[in-house]
Length: 505
Image 1 (tube, helix red, strand yellow):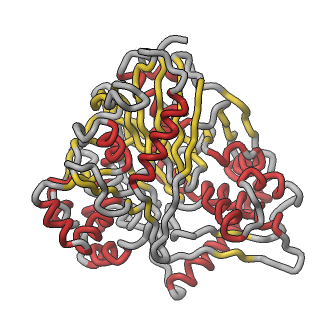
Image 2 (cartoon, one colour):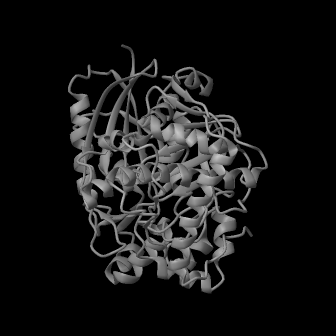
Image 3 (tube, helix red, strand yellow):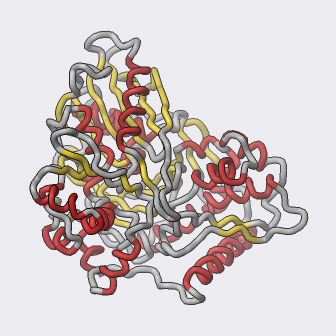
């Protein structure tokens, strides 16, 4: 079978551990969910130890048939922005992880905006000032737990996104590090100087002693403890989940774009070595650091797509399993005029409206659960079009195709509707766990399993291409209905006054 690479994909709701062979084929996979905690409305937390337990269980399952020495490398990809703080000696968390969806630091963002820091933050980090990112989550912790501030300043505590937490646990605390892609999502990292920004740390009241070392995405970070199911394998690839998916989709050329339909959806387009600022509500982020070259991307972060399906299941009970969504939606020819704007955690790109709340409109006496399911699926595609249109407006270059992945991309209904809305082919790979594959490729490149990105691209495999079928007039009518639904949600959230899209410095 040759050398194997293990990939740990630490998502928002669960852990996937994947074994990949040198041909780029998955040979084993395990998944474990972990609980979501909602202590207050708008607050979302994870117990870091529950994440770690899920990693250990999934890794043990796929490792049971490993031959000695067959594992060449381990890669990690993770939910980004989620904030973990732990004791350096005991490796025990000192607070639940504050999840990327959590809105508790919205007031801190408003405070920073009122002090005139918004453009400074955007110019140095490529990000908008929003509670989505790690920086103000740390500010909240330091302000609300005085004991933690004192311990942080004394060097007793460590901060990290989930990748950093897992690296610490895998190495027994010997390594406190992250990669550039995750660092670029903290709102504390200068994406051009490639360093933690002292002025931003001061503004957000974050002690430098908390922060990890920042390393390239394909790089040997350290080795796992020998007593773990992995054995002492080197940790050699790390990237935030969306950057890992861009890499796993072999989007190595400027202009190549992908969308991952997960808990949220994230559209990224490779911009090469250019880190130009968006004028239409997108983020500038680091795509990866490989072979001494930093590649950048434009990103549209959509907060809720797959999570809306979970809400149909857990909140409304109209489906028992997520897999029932497409069959149910296909029992009706369309959404019957229903629009579901799933602003369950505010609206992300290109609106950046944390006050927005979800809404279902267009309901009549003939509306049934199938219409709601179809509206939830269509909302994924509508939100993606919002972001793609912003990308085209920023670049002046039309999209040639959109590669898709993530759990919801298995729905051909979604892929076809997406192609219709965008007017370009939607391309689905044969294996849609491209996030985990991207981390595996980054790790394998560092250890010589694959020689270069051309070698990686040769292992990308096509499942299906969805060609557009609707006319421009049909698409225009559909999209105008969606835009009206979004405008109504934003108007209600703002008392009829909507905040304009952010402008670059």
